[in-house]
Amino acid sequence: MPDASTGGLILSFAAGVAATLIGVGSKYFMDYRLQRRQLQLQERTAVSDVMGNSLGQLRRSVLRLHDRLDSIFREPKAVSRWLVAGSTPEKDGYFLRSLTHRLFAFLSWATIVQWTIDALPPETVKERSDLGKLYKSLDHARDCLTNRLILDDSEYHTDRQGSLLFVGFIDDLTDLGLRTYQQNNKTIPTAVFDEEYRMGREPLASLRRWLTLPGKTPQPSIILARLACLRECLDLIQIGTAGKGTRIDPARLAAALDYAEMPSEIPLNLSATIPSKLGELLTQ
Image 1 (tube, one colour):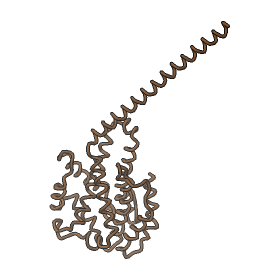
Image 2 (spheres, rainbow, N blue to C red; image 1 turned 45 degrees about the vertical axis):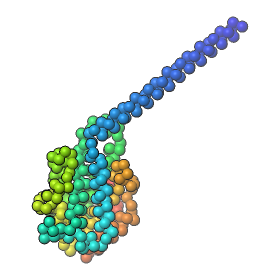
Image 3 (cartoon, rainbow, N blue to C red; image 1 turned 90 degrees about the vertical axis):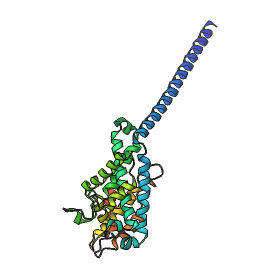
Image 4 (cartoon, one colour; image 1 turned 60 degrees about the vertical axis):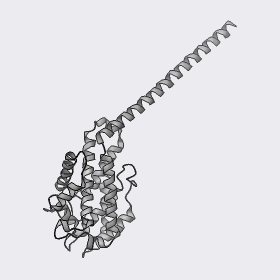
């Protein structure tokens, strides 16, 4: 009997210890989850404080530029009538002026967001994988306009800005956007763009000329092809509901490239070569 009683006491003691350990472990686990959640909320608050309204403005610029690019590939008049410069910038039509503005705004807000991400602590960026993905997707969108994405053999050797935009020129555009942002309480007022555009000042004057697709060479087609690639990359930028997917739309891209080839008198076979080049860029 004493042995049974002793055994019972030992079992009771062991059960009590186990229950205590389980209780302590559960409390530790709950405290850990609570602290981690609090840290995540603090981190999000800190990121929001640093980034301000820049993500919202970037999202808006993505949607507005995407809408304008859709209009180009939806309407045959876009190239022949809408993307035609007037005798002075003041006499340009709405479509050309708005496309120039929306491309400028997107490049500016993309740079501002990347600049802000660069200012965050490395451990914060490491924890927020969405910020790293956003940063890279913005790089890809900008690369569609530069020699990071070579669409034609003529673009390998050039001493002047033709069917692509030089990286230094895009830097000039975004410098204008950053300067405007810093001088206007973290906004980029349309009035500032309107004044620079109306006066024909650089770098907007060169962007305007690039978008008017001059001449009867392959250049207009390649510029349109770059804009088609840019539209695909805009869809990959995930900000709230701004991004629509994680892959380019092959059918839509092919249709846009066929449309882009129409102004050219020389067969370029863009839809057979460009999708794979864009795919390679997106894996870098």
